[in-house]
Length: 326
Image (tube, rainbow, N blue to C red):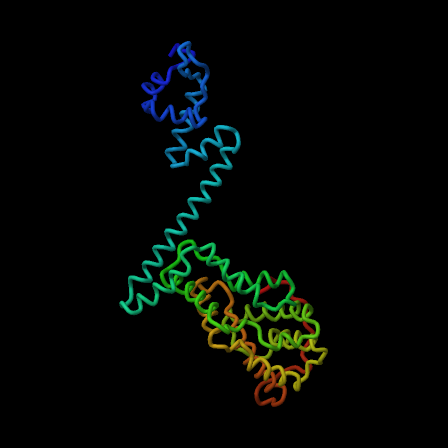
């Protein structure tokens, strides 16, 4: 082409884009006008061709005109636009996958169960809001004296992000969790004994070691019994109460934890549902609680009656645990 500028009709003929669409691009500020003819008609320079190429490529990706306009005006970098569009597509994909899982959960059941599931699943179709309701619940319910870092970790474990590609069972379990937390009188995960701590921050700091050791034992399938995990658990409670780790204190602690909320059936169900939601990635606190309770009982028996096994008393000093907090 030998032209320095082109009319809108010439651009339309050369690009295959209708005059109406090109006029819309011009009016939206997407297509720069080089000059006006003596008759007042718009003329377009070489930069119009570059802009049309950019618009075509972005529109092929179904990028909204408003987003293209921000890039064209320099308000937004192309890389930032791509990142924002990618995030948007991922969110839409998650919503579609969640909808697919929801429909799958409603498909494979009898009519009566289908109606029950429909009522439950309707609670969690807006995923960001659904998760926020869980996190808000646990921030209200967990003990205020818990150190913030540990509080944040516990809330994250109790209210996980929904999977991007959930199974029907995981979608239903996530909805069931919301039903549980909305039940009047739903018990928080800690026992009432946490309120008896004289030095709560120190207690929560030391209990992390016991949690990490217990998590490792449960993951490895070890049977409950005397050992490092139980000793760390007892030590945390003894130090917080300014007590010594003695058989008598262990009997007291065993009575305390045996009646604690770790065995609340609603909480047992909550942790079981979390297992389904996360695919077993998070520690089941009810299972850990039961493991420690049985291990504590066996440690008492071993200390008081050698026939139940050997136990070093007093328990050996612990090395500080530096692994990840469970």
